Length: 326
Image 1 (cartoon, rainbow, N blue to C red):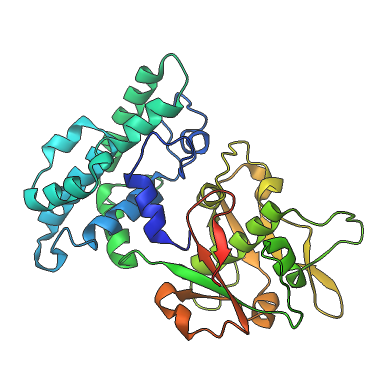
Image 2 (cartoon, rainbow, N blue to C red):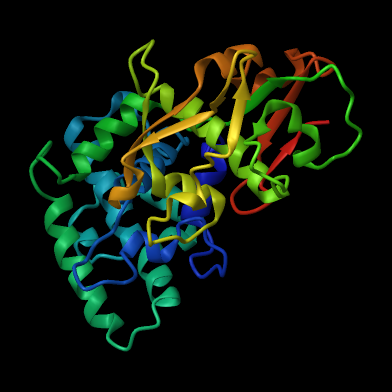
């Protein structure tokens, strides 16, 4: 999630992967008949940023119509929709893209047929193509509906894909273990009723939640404590295909912060039991301040004192996809 470059690459290579970043049941509402594709706007925006700022296209010298039509060709081709042929425009840019990412052409359609086990999947896919061809080619900035031009505007605002790392102030006690659950146990305490320490994969989720919060704060006004968390985006980073909206799979209430006077939850989430994908989410700001937790650009790693700080790198998705830079 904080390595947008690897996230982008997961969307344009190997659509038949058995361990995709884009979680099939969450994306499709368990391959339902409504043509739902939850989180599609985020994926299309990542792909568009990779195209526009990836050296394929001279965006500064292109007209709005030329940019729009070229991106539409790229994205509809990625979706595997027939309407892609209606948009060509900058053929050289499209050729460069296809030469570098040949598997991006028809990626989502191949992915869908790989993971959908239903007998009528051709009919279900036809519904998706009908629904999203109309929506994505429609007017801009409509309530609850996204168009390709909306995606382009978001991509231009966000700029080039970034790789960031998370830094955390170290404890005074030196831990020789390489396991996250040992290295970072100083960050939290547990409720007195808890008898077992969290597993390695749970501590990994805990660290990813902190990183996700800091990442999403860039999208909010300065000083705002809560962020709008896209639950699907977070769980795709986990590599967890949870379409049942189970809060316990990501909302780690047992992790507490000892302020000296009392123990408070490190994370707070609102409306988690309503089955919503977008949830108001916060990591305790005093906790972040105490341990000087922040995101840095990957190019700044050498400027960080490794005797004083842990540097956590995002190496993809799934269990074991974050690690400390040694």
